[in-house]
Amino acid sequence: MITNYSIGDFMIRLQNASMAKRKEVVLKSNKLIKAAAETLKRAGYLNEIKIEGDEIKVTLSYKKKEPVLDRVKIISKPGLRIYMTAADIAEIRKPSILLISTSKGVLTSKEAVKENVGGEVIAEVL
Image (cartoon, rainbow, N blue to C red; front, side):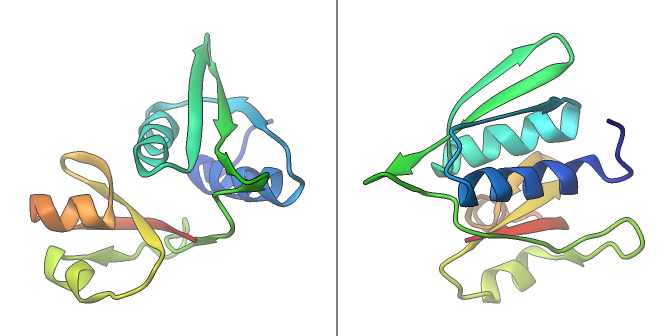
């Protein structure tokens, strides 16, 4: 299946798998999805990532039989991209993290503030 906004589709599939208490998600892969998956793994939301050909298989992390990833809110959409500077990101005080596509790759909000870079806000992960 081909989608118009592959990273948004990836994030929503992760949320749906989490809500259904599934362990794995398999879908077509591209550079942005691979980078976002690696960032989510560093943040502790994903347990394992396997790339087989043009597909990516991710395993969700669980604690006490509950998924770590609770909800995902897509911020940037194909019709409206949202950008933030490092200063704007530093002002946000929420328990969630932001996935940000920067010049240094896809980073969490904490990593972007530490690196002092801004970029396109892909999604908010709770």
